[in-house]
Image 1 (cartoon, one colour):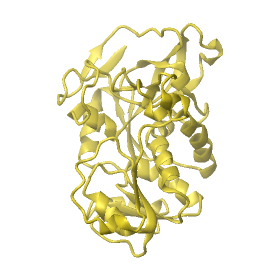
Image 2: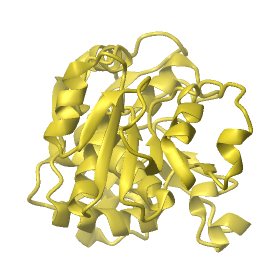
Image 3: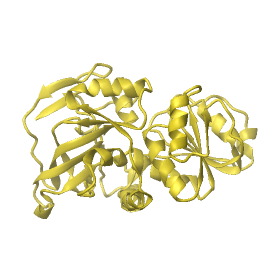
Image 4: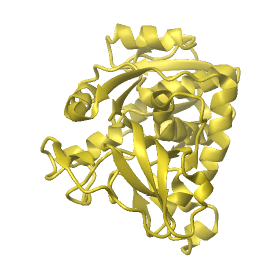
Amino acid sequence: MKAMVLERVGSPLVLTERADPMPGPGEVRLKVEACAVCRTDLHVVDGDLAHPKLPLVPGHEIVGIIDLAGEGVDRARIGRRAGVPWLGHTCGACPYCRSQAENLCDDPLFTGYTRDGGFATHVVADAAFAFDLDQDAGAVAQAPLLCAGLIGWRCLKKAGEGKRIGLYGFGAAAHIIAQVCTWQGRDVYAFTRPGDDEAQRFARSLGAVWAGGSDQAPPVGLDAAIIFAPVGDLVPAALRAVRKGGRVVCGGIHMSDIPSMPYSILWEEWQLMSVANLTRQDAEEFFPVARQAGVRTYTTTYPLDRANEALADLRAGRLSGAAVLVP
């Protein structure tokens, strides 16, 4: 198989020929059709997330066709399209797994971080964490749903039932969840990098009732805000934008330090929380919602050997929607 491999943190990925991987018990092998590029991939490559498995094949928004099944896996799954997300395996035995909080598992494996991911022509995955996908929808269109969509959905659930929702950082996750919010009848307020007129136009085209820079205050108090951008400075800004008793949800796996802030912007029962990883239940809920809402993902495709270019474009903020590698 071919794979883009991270050999050393902070270095470019290297196109490498490897033996085709073989699935073990409880595993499947997928022939990769598409793998979206997530900001978490940047955090792994750039060293913001410590101790990745090295050498490593990144990528955790994988869509492919199951072509081999290991012992104990229903062979009827062979030939079907499946998706592999960030959470690639859980222990099933710790207190979190036993209490329906497998996203907080004490002994997990993460796709494209502690086990090889989808920047490759083939990938092996835990069959229990390879979700059946729509066989008719396009692979490229579905790839961003495996993380941007799932994490966006988990964030939206944490944000509550409020009508006015602020989205800070209008990238892959926000452009998906904005469509869900609009379908639900909520009002979306989109916050982009200051002066990013193109991103603001993109947000309005997806139903945002207001779009402006993250240095601006919204025209009304928000019921909740979700921060997708990995920028700690946005936390106090979002708290100030949200009404009393409202919520601010931090959706990223990594964020720069949150600055010192006055207690007064938290005191009147504002809630500040984070989202960690995802659960299989999130997938069971979200994929039908995405279909019902008619979610359309906006993608820019790259061949596998241009993965470094895709990462650079994401790092520089040159993308609207999501980058997707196509082997």
